[in-house]
Image 1: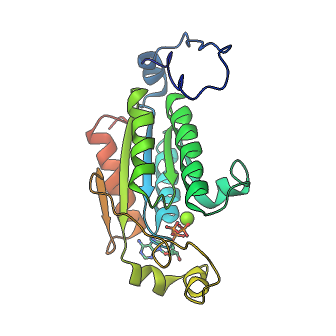
Image 2 (image 1 turned 90 degrees about the vertical axis):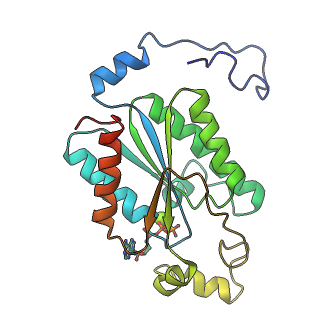
Length: 211
Ligand SMILES: Nc1ncnc2c1ncn2[C@@H]1O[C@H](COP(=O)(O)OP(=O)(O)OP(=O)(O)O)[C@@H](O)[C@H]1O
Ligand SMILES: [Mg+2]
């Protein structure tokens, strides 16, 4: 892993120095019994990202794996409470949570990041942040059609957006760019439990967690 020159082009100071950990990724992996990784859940509002991420987190921790959900709404309560939904703020939202996901994955966790993340560019940036650090990154597309999300509308956001009360609402007044490089696609017909099981099997098959 070469973090030394990381972000050098965007650093605002020349007086900071990267400190290398004494814990190698291999040793951390051996001690934790898992490969720190980010699973990135993307899809429309109401598609089922949070439901799946929290179901899977529960399943993983019950099996004694170390996992944690970073959820869009929760992060906007804290770290990103100064950001709105303009294109620039959405970009910064994803950049920050991408960096936090990377840190958690580097710490050895199975990070379940649940963000609409509508733009390919943002998701590609987050993938690159992980790949440059030698960390696993899996994009999981919750392929629930707009009509189904709008029918569910648990937060009544689509209704508000249709009335013009929410500007830049993904799927209504702002685009959602479907991934074409997702590692896993979740069909709308799946229950959250079935999808969690499917992702768990994927993690075991790829030796990210022990069978
Ligand atoms: N697999 C599923 N089958 C049927 N209903 C589901 C499924 N997954 C989630 N739901 C329901 O869909 C609604 C939206 O789910 P959820 O809150 O997980 O979406 P989300 O993608 O996280 O949305 P947001 O981006 O707004 O946070 C909830 O009412 C949830 O119970
Ligand atoms: Mg959610």
